[in-house]
Image (tube, rainbow, N blue to C red; front, top):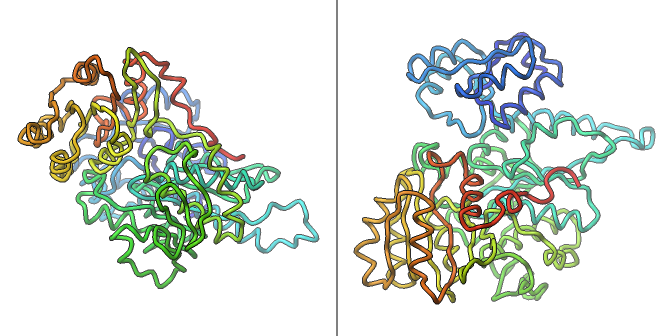
Length: 489
C-alpha cells in the first residue's frame, strides 16, 4: 500500500516511538493532510500535542481488549509500530472487523518499489542526473543480523559504493523515504526483525537479496509461540520471495527450506563461503585470515561469510573487499568490551535476548574466568539446554536477575555443584554486578552482561540496560552507545 492510497480513508497510528514519529512525518511529507489519530502511552500525550500538527490528535488505547478493539475498528488503516504485536486480542478482533494493520516497513517498500519501477523506465542518456537503480539487501536472523547488516554496509562502502544502513538497527526506513537524488544510495543494507519481515511481503515488493543468518526461539510472547515466530521470521524468504536468498547451510531450519521462487545461495558449508578455524574459505580456496578482525565470537566471523556471499552475488570482488573487515567498528551492546576496573573486565552484551546467545557469548570467553549475569523479561523461553550446558562448560559464577531470574535460578541450582560454579540471585542489575565481582575475587576476570532475555519492565530496551551496566561499572554510558555508520554513506 502506497501512502497516496490512504487518501480519503480513516487512518490511525499505533505507537509514538521513533517508528511512529517517522510514519507521521512520512505521511505529512507525502501529502496526507487529513485527520490522524495516534494511540500512544499516557506519558506521550504532551509530546504529540507539542508537534503543533492541528490535524493530529492523541489518545490512550483502552487497556480492556474489547474496548481497545472497538476503538481500533473505527479506522480503516492502522499504521502499527513494530513492537506492537498484531496477535494481541484487540488487534485480531479489529482485523476481523475490517481494520488493516500495516507497518512502516511495508509502506517504505511499497513506495520504494514504485520509485524503482519509475527509475527503471528513465532514459539515462536523456536524464543523466537520475539516480542509479538501488538494490535492497535485507538481513534477518535470530542472532547476528545487526552485525551482518553493518558489515555489509561497511564492505560495500569500502568498495566505493554509496550505501544506506538502516532498518531495525536504529534508523527507521521511513526516515529515509525521501532522499536527495544527489545522495541516493546504490545499495540499501536493511536489518529486519521478526516484527518486520511480514511487512516486506505485505508491501508487494520483492527484495533483491535476503540474508537469513540462523533461527532460534525468540520473542515468543510477541509471536504467540515458537512455530509462529519461525513462520514470521522466514516470511522474508517464503512470502516476500526475494530474487536471491542467501542462507546459512549450517542452520537445520534454513537447510530444510525449499524456495522455488528464489535463487538460493548457501554459505557455511564446504562448497561456498565458510570458516575453517580463523580463515574464511571460498570452496577450497583460502581467502582471508580473520584473526585481526574486531569481531568477538566465531558466530560473528561466520556472518562475514554471509556478507561475502552477498557481495559476490552482486557481481563485486568479494575476496578483494574481505580485508576491509579489519577496519570494521563493532556495534554497541554486542559483546562490547567496555574496559577494566579494579581487576575486572566488563563486557556489555545487552543485545543478548536468548539463552543460545548467552551460550555463544560464554564461548567467546571460554579460556577466561567469567561471571555472567542472566535474566530479564520472561517470555517463556526454555532454558533447559542452557542449564544442561552448564554441567560441562560453566563459568566461575552465574548471577540471575529479572522477572525470569527465579525460574532460571531454580533450573540451575541442581547443576551448580556438578558444574562447579557459584550461583546467586539478585534483585536488580547493581546487586547482580556486585555478586559477580565478589565471585571473581582477587584473581579478577570478566563480568559479562549477557542476559539471554529482553529488558522490558526494568528498562525501556536493551540499549538502556546496556548503558546502565556501563554506568554501574564506571564507564560513560553515552560514549559506548553510538551505532557507527547509520544512514547513507
